[in-house]
Length: 341
Image 1 (cartoon, rainbow, N blue to C red):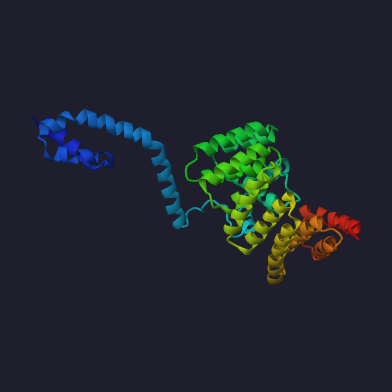
Image 2: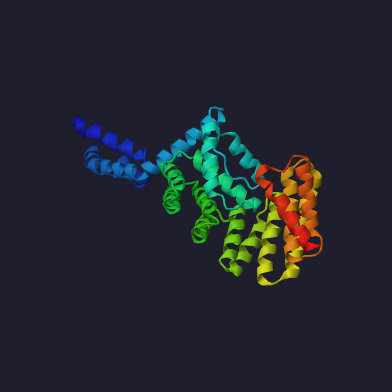
């Protein structure tokens, strides 16, 4: 009966190698060979079903492990991840890794997608989302890119939703990408996407910021205020702090608390003043100052805030540091400064 002994040996080895079968270990150790061999077909069926059920997760985990190992050896670069610490620098890193062909794709998509030209935070989020979409090799991302270029936004959003639902550890990133791409065009879809990102990563700063904005746009001011206050507790950099103060200030304007809004906008401006003084060569820091001046001007006109914004924009233009995409700021500030006198 050599086959019985061989089968029993296989079963004992299989049970020892499967954590899910740990409960059978005492039985296969103590039972005679014939009884253990009798259990062989059942053990085999279980292993097959277990393997099929976990194959997808195992493959994903294995691929991730191999990628991280290769990155550690310098063989590949890690995918760019959203960074709370410096959103601008994270975006620059993404764009620097693009090939000439990818750059053309990026510009073509961005011209279709971008709705946040006047808002640096939205503009950066959308640029990062477009760059991420191009870098993503998944079939759904390729389908979404094709649909966006064809003018079928709804089909593109649907493809990205399928991708985000199927995602494992990077689900929050996928949902944020969809939210940024839908922002300004489909508020309900953008809000739903950021809500799912929040469920996956409750303390992510930029998710909280966009939820505060989208709830405010939807008229849900209690939720908007809660998210804005939570974003203030989730800051990881001075620039984050200034953005969070602005978000809460915007909500307070909507609720009619202009005094509270002024305090928040002034707190944001104080942070940006420090950052601009510490980084005199940073065009982003100067642009952030213009944002603060504009927010205070919107709530308290006639106090010279638009003049300050215009002077800052003029200085950037004179130094050749006003990006072509931001040239509209100069005329915008000049117009409001003239009206504010």
